[in-house]
Amino acid sequence: MNIKRSVTIKHRAQLTLVLVTALMGNLKAHAQITETSQHGILNVDVGRSPTIDDVPQPVELYGCNNTVVATQVYWDTQNQVVGEIPYGLRISDSGKEYKVSKYYVVSPPAWRNKNQTENAAAKKEAQPFIGLVTPDNFTFKGNKPAQILNLDYRILMPTYLENVPVDFNYAEDEILSCAEQGVVSIPINTDCSDFPWRAGAEGASGIGVLNTSGSTAFLPTLKKNKEPLQCTTTLLHDIMLEHKVFFATEAGLTDTINLTQYHAEQKTMNLVCLPRAKNDVPAGCL
Image (cartoon, rainbow, N blue to C red):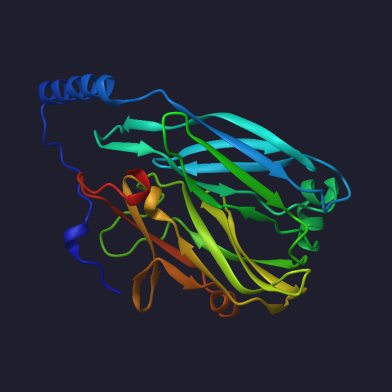
């Protein structure tokens, strides 16, 4: 696979200190005019705990330009309010205007007991519970934006989890790796068409995050190391303000891969990050 040299990243000092100072001064003034200090509110309804130890469940929101809101919610509790969620117009360090309004919701698997939560070896042998988060993404609107969110971890059947590795340090041609460009986390959507429900239905998808701390995408399997579900994984770069991100494959760059096939062939998810043009604001940041 060849990547055109037209997207090559070059570091050149093109501005004098005086011009840089003037530009930053203008950006600061512009930011004071356009940025807003509004906040959104999340109202969360959480079903009964599927686990033995009734510990709080972590939830994270991922918005435009690496906006992250980390919180936790409690089982079998309705109308839990999460406030002070960033919302409104912003100016990035590069001078690009964007809006924090769309969020992806990440709620990781729930483990049966604290030992599995804290012990990597126990976690590897466990069957965690995968929850249905509804909706798994949303866009705030209005002057006093709010959103209702539902979490239910008792609908889907427990599965085992197999890992598929990801490489942020992958580099080809003259393009810097994602890690070298400062990309540290990328939201993903994993869609499994045959994920079994307790009620007999099948099919589920969920949001996860790839990051440089060694995370992997997980592939659910019905048995330990056997019978993997049929899943695809898609990179959600519509909230990544400064970069477009793709998987590097033998067929070229793509934002969706067959996760089941990758696991079967023991492949690594190689990432390529391409800088966006100054006037390229992704759909999730408008």
